[in-house]
Length: 181
Image (tube, rainbow, N blue to C red; front, side):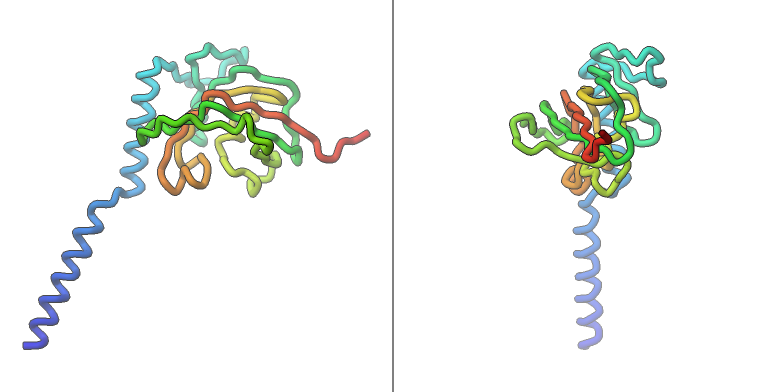
């Protein structure tokens, strides 16, 4: 009798655990939801997605280039000056950061913070957000961009909670920590 009771309890526990796991989304479901959400964001804001980077490097305010390697969409507001070289520090300031898929209407910024975000160009271990580096191929010192960032290219928090970000204005300042005189 004890064996039968044990088997029944074991089956009940297994069914309970199995059912509770079904309520969680899979990574593939998060990616699918994000893809739909980005398409909806693009449609609602009447954005145009370019298949190729503009030859003249000029974007209309509603045009975004989608980087095929990362899935990051960006619009260059200002190309800025000289490009970053390996080992240079890049200071990041932004405003208008929103998470448009989860209903968070707060706009975040670090413009007034005494400490900008910093990365060392060419050193991925310093990148707190991979998406910030993507436009640096085309944008230099004091360049400004708008970004649509898939969660897997965003900040660690964004990756952990599957949060897709939109940056309304992100600016780069490039500094050489070891200037040659």
